[in-house]
Image (cartoon, rainbow, N blue to C red; front, side):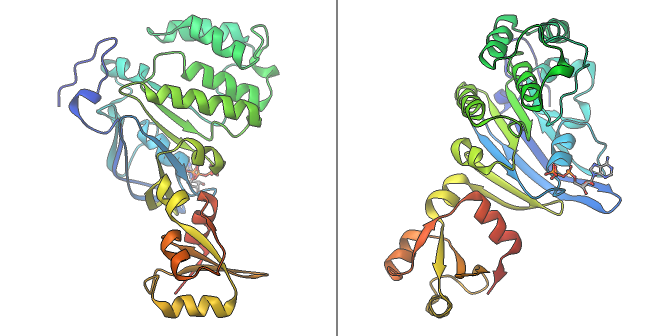
Length: 310
Ligand SMILES: Nc1ncnc2c1ncn2[C@@H]1O[C@H](COP(=O)(O)OP(=O)(O)OP(=O)(O)O)[C@@H](O)[C@H]1O
């Protein structure tokens, strides 16, 4: 595939391919493997990436960015194979990728304003006014040194950098973890503004699933290095439900056949049984007296990973 790059053109988008894609990625570490991980993020999408600690989120993200050598499969961003992103010929594509990891990787002695200057040399499309505006909005004093920043402030600085070089895709690995609720709220608004422009997409891993409930279009779950679900967010939070049943009600629901056998996922607690309901509206018609809450991403993940199956 020939990719013609120039400033202002969106590499990848013109070829109608996903902006971010993994095809059967395999990576073996001692005691852990990414096992045939496939995913795709299309134009205009915010895709949340969830899973417990050590599930493989960061490894997948690093694989997509070409930062780890793969044992199989391939990733691509903006149409460029991940393994080729470091080649000078793809420098233009790299500029279009904004990346934030959960740790800040800038020299501690640099002041916030210096970071802007360093990045202006690294990125042809660096926008100093945008960086100044973002650091101002994020309450980052230009004279503060990187080593003096709190964790949340460091995350804000990384985010300001990622949003100041005309990126078309953002890949965020736990990027909201250190932010206070007000800063998270503001950032989520900015991410929605970002992705509303043509040719853009976001992949973000997060343990703060309320952030994903607010802005994600789709949610990918990973466990033990395997993708375990890939669902529209609305399917989880609008259609699914979590029924709070007593044991007798649970048995009645099981016997009713309303949820196919083998797909009944449940979790026992001190008060009874929580049951994953695929369609809470159908459920409410059939069992109007059993309380059924909206599903959250946390509950869906927990029921998928730890729930019993019947
Ligand atoms: N460089 C490495 N060498 C060996 N093992 C590694 C390496 N990097 C990651 N791993 C292992 O791969 C597994 C997945 O780690 P990964 O960082 O992808 O998880 P994660 O889903 O991002 O977790 P968290 O939510 O804690 O950030 C873990 O078992 C980890 O120990």
